[in-house]
Length: 254
Picture 1 (tube, rainbow, N blue to C red):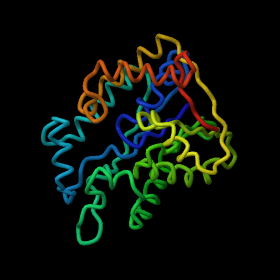
Picture 2 (cartoon, helix red, strand yellow):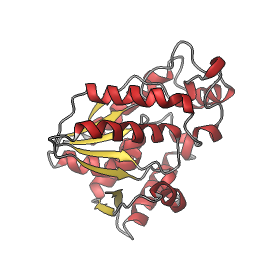
Picture 3 (cartoon, one colour):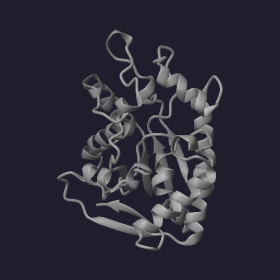
């Protein structure tokens, strides 16, 4: 089985949609586990940033449910199974004195708040409860872009793997978080001192087209990165061709 750990309800598809489509088409079992797929808690941050996001998404009073529906549609296009964990997005989480932990766009690309060490432990326990196969191939976010939720997923998954690999044959790869990976400096920063080697995954035209169709399912999120669907398709294709030096590809690091 191929297991893709996605921080949010779009990250795995944006970053790995082509390879997921090719694996599913070849009859491989694929599952995307999205960690921060839960509803906003009753006592959630009500910052100007959150209100701005909700207005832009246009998903009504329960935007998280709308985002899950988009994700289910996208993964159906790719042929992947899915698991949605109940943890809320960082924009909703509160810290001391019920103050938003990440009240601005700049904050979500900063360092993980110290009080979230407990959250990393909770995510690790949730992964253990999934009883995922010990012979799985696991794909984690490289954390290009330095989004706090991406950092948390990588840290929790690495803790889970320490206990999970015993007696198993788990292979781990790190995928480049798209669209942040459009900036090579973000990828270099995420690699840091880790001694990882790049592996190109060539994509055929059918897989690239299916990936673009799947990304288009995230209608509420397109405006976060693109002016419209046409620009999204153009940039997804352009990035894939840049990675593959003229031929579409995605890249992971092992």
